[in-house]
Length: 307
Length: 332
Image 1 (cartoon, rainbow over the protein chains, first blue to last red):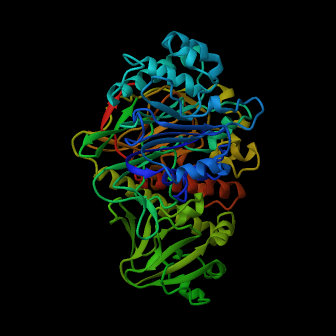
Image 2 (cartoon, rainbow over the protein chains, first blue to last red; image 1 turned 30 degrees about the vertical axis):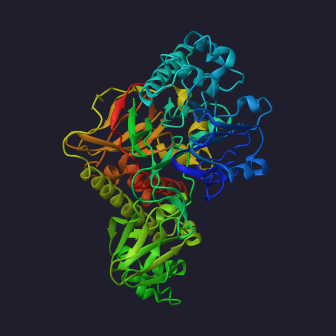
C-alpha cells in the first residue's frame, strides 16, 4: 500500500506538490494521516510541461530510496515547473521477501506508451494469477515488464485494452480500458478462487487528462493470517481525495491550498496534502474520477460510478 | 476555544445540575461529575473551535445555540447544523481522533460545559450510575444527530432520480460456516479492540449465530424499524439514504462496523436503507440487548457502549464528509 499525489492545471513548481503543503507527498513517506504503514519502497515522479523539449514525453525520476533524504530531488523540485505530475511513494510490507528496487517504483511508463500509471493498492495473491494475465496482454508489451509488482502488470493490461497501446489515447478510451481491465482481473480472481480484499486505486495521466479509481475487489474479506493485510481490517476503504479550483499554491494568509474560482487546476491524492482539509473532497467508493480539459484552460471534473 | 470567555474556575454542583443533559441524575452523582467538567461562555460570533483544529474536548450546551460551519472551496462558510440546549458537540474527535471537521460558532450568547479528553476517557469506562447515564445520554444525542444528518442528506437529493438503481432483493440467509467467524477473528474486529478476550465478545453477541447473505440482499428496507443491530463480520453493507427514486450512499460498513444505530436506539423507522454490497457475513444483536447495555454498569457493557458510540461517531463523520456525487455509471 502506497501513497500518490497527482496534479493537472496551471504550471506549478514540483515542490508545491512534493514538499510545500504540510501534508505533502514526501512527508507522507514517513508520516501519513490515513494509514499506518511507512512508505519506504522508493519514490517516483513523471512531470509534463509545454516548455519541456518533446512535451508529450514527461520528465521522469524514479529511485528506490526515501525522498526525505534526496537532496537532488529537493533541488530539482524547487527549480522545475510542470502543469501535470504524478508522484508516488511506495509502501511495502516490512519483509525480506519484498523486492525493493528501481524496477518496482511507480509511476510506470513504457517506451512509446502515451500515459503513465501508478497505484495505491495491492492485488492479494497476485503471484497465483500473474501468468493468467499473459492471455490478455499485448505481446509487444511483455518484454517491457521489468519488475515484480502487480501494478506494472496492471499497467500492461490497461494498455492492452486500447486499440493501439502506442498511440495517443483520449480519456474516454483510457477509462473504458480501465473498466475492462478491472473486469478481467475479477474474472481471473474468480477462476483462481481469490476472494480476499484487494484495493485498486489507480491514477493515470498523459499530461493532458487524468483518471483515478477508488476501487476494491472483495472489500471486507480479509485474510485469516497474521499479515499486514489481515490487520487492514482496522482501516477503512482505501482512500482517494481531490481538490479542484484555481491555482494550487500558497495563499496570502500563508496557508496552502487551491484558490477559489474557475476550475483551472486539480490535485488528486491518496489523502489530502494539507492538514486543514477544507476544499478537499473524498471520491466515493467504487468510482472513477476523470479530469479532462474543456478549452480556455479549464478542467471538467466528472465522477463515474464503478459497479 | 478561540477568543471566548473561558472557564471561570470551579462552579457549584448546583449550576451543573441545571444542564439539561443531567436532568434527573442524583446530586451526589452530579457532584462527582463536576470534577471532570468546566464551564464555557461565548458571545455571538465567537468560535468554540475551528475546522482543522486538533481536538481534545467535548462540549455540552446549557443555553444558547452553536452553528456548525464548514468552509467551501470558494472560501465561504456553509452551516451544516445548529445545536441547542442539552446537545453536545465534539465527541466524534474524542472518540475516534482526527481534526475538527467543522467550525463551531456561537449564534447567540451561549454557555455550557467542557469535558476534557482525560475526563471523557475515565467516564466512558466508569461504572458509577451518573457516568453511565451521562454516557448513555451522550450516545443517544449523537444517534439523534446522526438521524438528522441522514435526513438532511436525503433532503438535498434531487427529488426525481440521480441515484443507483434498486436491484436489492429480500433473501433468506444461511448459517455462516464456523471458520468465517471464529472467536479469534471476532476479537480482532474494530468494535472489539478494547475487549480482553472472546468470552467478553460472546457476552455481547449472546447466542446470535453468524449469518451469510449473498450480494444484493436487503437488510433494512425503506421505512423499516430494525429490531436488531447488525454487526458486519465479513464483507460490507451499503448504507444509503433515499428521496423518491434518488439514492445516495452515506457509508460502506465493513467488518467490525454496526448498521441500524438510529432505528434500534430510537425504536423508530430507520433513516437509511441497507443492503449487502457483496457476499456478507453478519451477526444480529437484538435491539433490546443493545439498549440495555447502554445503561448497564458492567465492564463488558461499558466496552460495548464505548464501541457503539465510536461507531456512531464514525458514521457521523462519514455522513458529514464532503463526498462527491457520481454523475454516471460504468461497468467493472
